[in-house]
Length: 104
Image 1 (cartoon, one colour):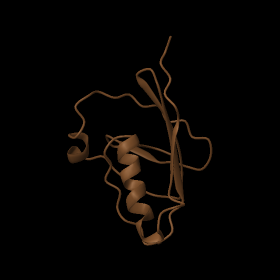
Image 2 (cartoon, rainbow, N blue to C red):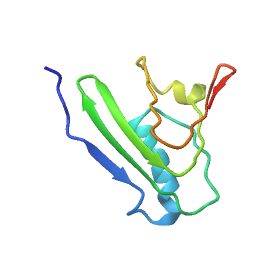
Image 3 (cartoon, helix red, strand yellow):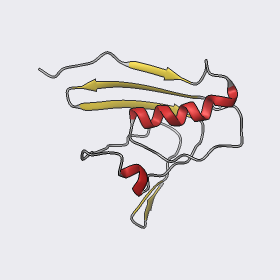
Image 4 (cartoon, rainbow, N blue to C red):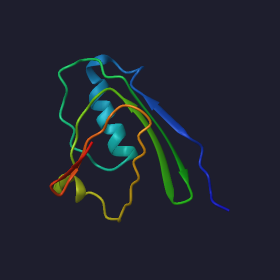
């Protein structure tokens, strides 16, 4: 039987506006993999993330204001293990670029 952890939830709603985006960047790097996410001009950033481990897999739900990020050699080099990701978009839009290819 697969082991199931309790779901953990995190949100920017209780964080002072000036620190919301930087804390979001930290949360994404903690729940996903390391990302380079440039600072935004807007002070308010509404976001939440919920994650749960199911055996060796991690299910992550992210809801956030628009943002951008990239994984370059520096960020990729922080992970020692191989990863496989599946992105299932429930609403909104997301653009993914990799190896000269782009998908919206």
